[in-house]
Structures are given as C-alpha cells and as structure tokens.
Length: 135
Image (cartoon, rainbow, N blue to C red):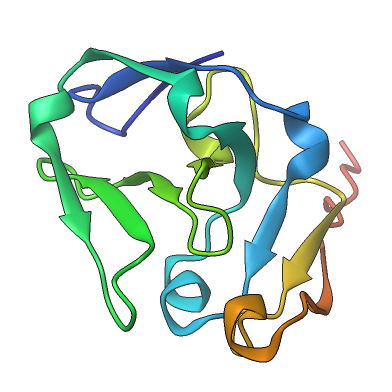
C-alpha cells in the first residue's frame, strides 16, 4: 500500500501483516491525544519513497517506542511499537484508499502496558456509525 503525510512530503509504501484486520487504537497518554487508528506491519516492510529526512521522532517514558511525524505538516505517519519493536503501527488515515472510520476498532489498554503488567488487555471498542442520509 502507498501512504503519505498530509502535505505529501513524506511518502512510503508498506505491506500490512494482517491488512486492515489489525486496526486498533490505544488509550495511553499519547495515543489518546493523537486519536489515530493504527494497522500493523513488520518494521522492515516500510519503504520511504520521498521525504524520510522530513520525519521527526518523538519518544517519552521508557523511550522504547518511536513515534514518527512529518516535521512540515505534523501528521503522525507510524510508530515502532514498544510491545513488539520488530513491528510498526501505521496510521491508517495515511494510506491511500483507506479510512479510519471503521465500524468497530479495538482499543488496547495502553495505560496498563503489557510490558509493565505482563499481559495485553483491551480497554474497549470504538464504534463509528455513519449518519443516515435522507436526501
């Protein structure tokens, strides 16, 4: 799949390990504010075709996860996961012909990270119901 940030400076291709079926959100302090739906890929399955030098890195707390943003438009494109550093989460909204407005998205419990408590837990399900079009 092809993807890019909002301004198009950062462009990439990525192979998703499970396609859109891996869609998820997280309720950790950063993800709750970021609000993106992420899909999974192996860390070596992303190839930058333009603008890699325009990515900026943000890390916090344990500094294991690596969160990447376009330094021009500010859009989060992907992150290297703390729970599995061999995997990345890609912002579904950055992928061509994809939408983050899925009927249901599983929300992981990032406030109680599996690396801290020894198990992965889910926090809930985010649902999107389109408004009925009466026209």
